[in-house]
Amino acid sequence: MDKFEPKIAAFCCNWCSYAGADLAGTSRIQYSPNIRIIRVMCSGRVSPLFILKAFSVGADGVLILGCHPGDCHYIEGNYKTLRRVTLLKKVLKQFGIEEERVRLEWVSASEGKKFAEVANNFTQAIKDLGPSSLGPLN
Amino acid sequence: MAKLKIALYWAASCGGCDIATLAIGEKILKLAEAADIVFWPVGIDFKYADVEKMPDKSIDACLFNGAIRTSENEHIAKLLRAKSKIMIAYGSCSYEGCIPGLSNFYNRQMTFDRAYVETPTTDNPKKILPQTKVKVPEGELEIPEFYDTVKTLGQTVDVDYFVPGCPPEEKTTWLALEALVTDKLPPKGTVISHSVKAVCDECPRKRGEKKIKKFYRPYEIIPDPETCLLEQGLLCYGIATRGGCGALCPQANMPCTGCYGPVEGVIDQGAHFLSALSSIIDSNDPDEIQRIIDDIPDPAGTFYRYSLPDSLLRRAKIR
View 1 (cartoon, one colour):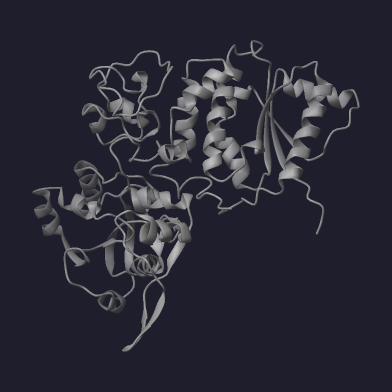
View 2 (spheres, rainbow over the protein chains, first blue to last red; view 1 turned 180 degrees about the vertical axis):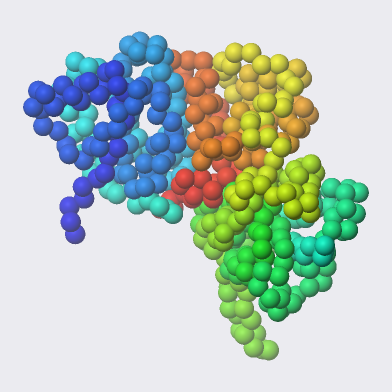
């Protein structure tokens, strides 16, 4: 069997985490190529719908990256995300999806190194979990 | 003008939708003037063979209630689609899967075990479960296959219109039937209801800023009759549910449970409600958020009460 290479969607907020990913790139830090970055204006823009959609089209894991608490460009978008992800994880469990497949992390614009670490750690965690085996029509 | 030919059918449903079609009251006389019922298993004795003999597209409209759970449901859905010019998914079960669709959190084996073995009122020591074929002295008997996954009508055949509700309100039913008998049908794919906005738009309760520290189940509190139920901590689904019902449940001091489906343009009603609900939780502390959320005993079943088969994931993964 081929080695399992997970597909991971990473939603990065425009103001902190996307800039953090950018810094990882300009600093030439290598990180897992399994991460597909999707830039959003705020982690609060990440509707649970996006996360479910990612799973329904075959993602093995979803990473949501936002500004550190208190640092949100829109004051409290990241707190809304925190509440949503907490509730969504409980729902996902009932759908038979391991809650570890969704991870929320705070990455600031100066944390290129942390971005790479999070990307690598999460990829490894998903590799350990195996494929989500969801996808269209489940 | 020749009279319209109408068929009514029930698949996986409780029968409430058939009663709801009668709930239009004296308007049924108007309907009888304009249309003949050519097939209606609940009300009139027709056989499937009678439908099979009808020419294709000879029925003007079919009001199909119930989800697709067995091979019989699917066969009749396809048969009636072929015979009907207009196919209407009538009621939440055929539109979104509804209560029968909740068994998509389980599989066939689990559903059978629960229904035929585990329920306290069942006496089945030999654990006999339904079989599609069984040999008896007279020969072999066959019953329809029970599917693992409940589907909506729209996932099974091409559907022209959707009528929401569990069951549809009288005025919603009449809106669809009136459009039919006066030949003023909306564009294909329309969800026929008086409103494209949320139930809150029709709800007379007073609304303020929504901040929730604790969720309650309806039996735990007696809510204030004037204030928004969601603000009082009840999981009122009005914010994520299409209006048109007239906000009847909130006016009876009960939270909306979401039977009219998503508002116009929303794909996944459960995710929509989850999103709105979690953003009004009044805490920024991870532990407190977890505690508040733990007051909701069955979030997936609550958020997808009527729409699991029609949701993005459609069913749970069973390990």
